[in-house]
Length: 208
Image 1: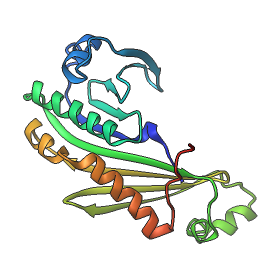
Image 2 (image 1 turned 45 degrees about the vertical axis):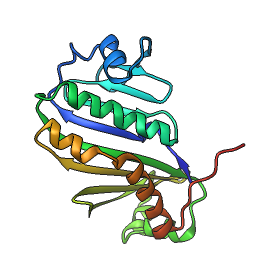
Image 3 (image 1 turned 90 degrees about the vertical axis):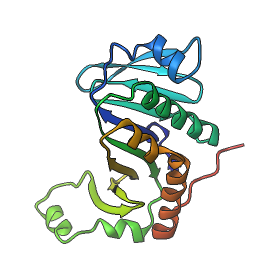
Image 4 (image 1 turned 180 degrees about the horizontal axis):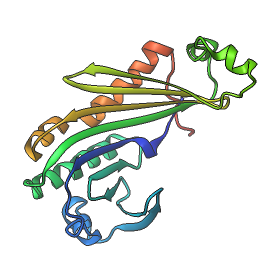
């Protein structure tokens, strides 16, 4: 099992003033750097500006700010949490609606036991029509640590994709800051342990 590091994020949903969240301000106030990397990320609707340090990337949007860990390391997790906390402290009156902590993984050697989870009642009938199943997704909403854990598994002929979203509705920057404290590394460990306990999936050690 491999981490999909692009999906290891903290998302603060609210009504953000993107005029304030310019690259210079983000670099100075959130990343504590005089110079940062900048790039345009082309999405489905419009290009988005990404501001990055070696450990953390930040994508400011009007309805949310995304903090992405660029490494699988304690330093990167701490950097994501520190940057998100700094935003909440420096813009405390911004209307906040929710926060999410997210992790993604992928597995190419899918076991028979896991593949069988996706053989639901109409699978054979769909094949007989005939249609080819390109992907099947199982989504569960669970409760964990006082918040919703949205767990999604998508199976394709090539791989298994797994996504964890630890979601909490909040109404203030102070509440979001309290709900974030110490949780990035804790929830990453929790997601990894769940995959081991439920499906015997373990993260591959990085190559030396």
